[in-house]
Image (tube, rainbow, N blue to C red; front, side):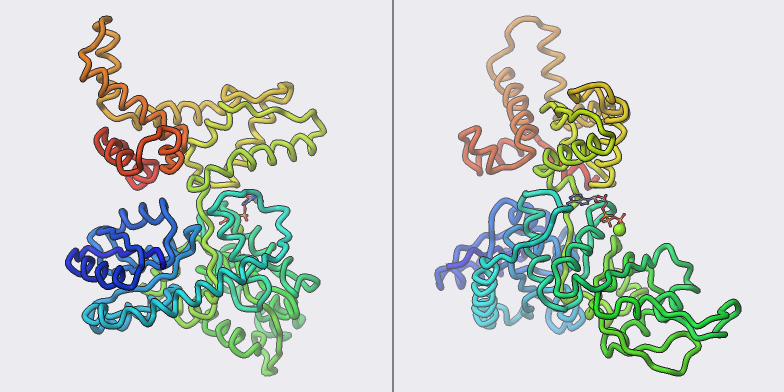
Length: 471
Ligand SMILES: Nc1ncnc2c1ncn2[C@@H]1O[C@H](COP(=O)(O)OP(=O)(O)OP(=O)(O)O)[C@@H](O)[C@H]1O
Ligand SMILES: [Mg+2]
């Protein structure tokens, strides 16, 4: 029996799929919007997700990697409209297990599903034999980062190209290095090229090298980074910045290993593994004609999508302690104690600059609290504390403020109904903050069922961090 999630706004189709899947003993959950689908998938583990493309609140394909990078790493089967071949192509390139055309979905569904489940079973047994991963610079034990580390371990043993995506500061370079260090090429060079920092005119000669006299100033022939990476790994950072003509030449190198330096007639050979990173949406760039679809296909044999820090706040305590401890060692000062309220403050900040921003902030804090043995939220910069106080107020549902003022003004017990409503708001807000919006934990602490928790949150119009960030 498998756990299956269907994300489709066509309720009729959903109920037909449910009947079909339940008849072969699978457990099925339905979501009728993308937002609900992602929410449900974050709350429970699924083996397979049947994902519609056109949903009322967005395109399923754009969220495919969000589903695929969930801790349970479900297999995704896309359901496309009839004859939508570009959708099917994009689905496969985005890492979907398979795609089904809507009119035949009921008829055709069992075969790809059975195959996906067989593949999944095999994947799970092989991932039990975990490779001992050298990951000293990657801190975090939460489910989101663990899922990425599992992918890293799987990718490291082979030679396939790996694309690492994620917001700025999420650790793309750290992961690229770890990939190299854990690969059979670890003893060979790890060569980085930052496509964003090189002027367009220099990218080509930096990558491929140039012959003597190839352009003004090229007095000597020069080897390119592709040659330097021979035997090792070539890490193309910010790969989205690669100009289109260089993309074409680069595609040839990764297909054939052969290339020609600028201004040279001789062909050279280099054997390297390619790892790329970007914080841009390469699929959108392909649609806009700014990135070659065939190159993206070659670069994305493995895809590691790193979660933003605000989506893995369970790792903030260990990251913060590790960073502060390293800073104290570096400054040769006594180790500091981080109070729980200091950590809680860190856990509620949205961290647009992710781990890098957290590290920079802690550096600033340690400099401020140089002589202090214990770190309190008081030591945080004013802008963080003010921002937090404001967000806390905004986060509270309207009724909370009203009820609070009312309680102060009246100074006498409130009517039972009003008091109960106010306490519900206070209690649920506290519960959500305390559990960092983890519904499972909230149910365990409160003893309230999952369905009831959702119902109550709905009632008080509680806005999750995700909802607020979307605004
Ligand atoms: N999981 C992690 N554990 C420990 N440190 C991390 C982790 N992720 C990131 N860092 C640290 O955060 C900083 C930023 O990481 P990195 O340079 O790899 O990010 P990036 O995703 O490449 O960012 P950008 O897109 O801005 O280039 C580095 O100092 C790195 O050591
Ligand atoms: Mg980087």
